[in-house]
Length: 107
Image 1 (tube, rainbow, N blue to C red):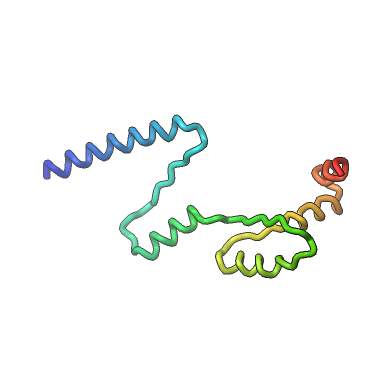
Image 2 (image 1 turned 90 degrees about the horizontal axis):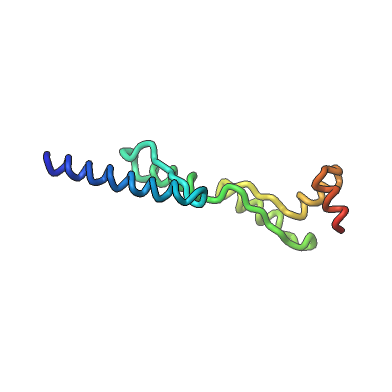
């Protein structure tokens, strides 16, 4: 039992050291803690996947290329959001947003 207490104290000290290093990195690192580790392997992997997988995919392509359907299908399959840069630019220019006005001025 004494060995477990020593291991716990050692792990707590190491965690504090790592946290101090990460906090010193100022925004380039992030601490992510799992809420529970006593769940099944599938549940733990699913939680890790939601934390680390891409959520939004922006694709910059020539408007003449038919990639929207393929990218949309991939986004549905992998639970992501697909945005076309071309469609976003067109949306901002047509709706005359401030971003669209700056795009038009830089043209």
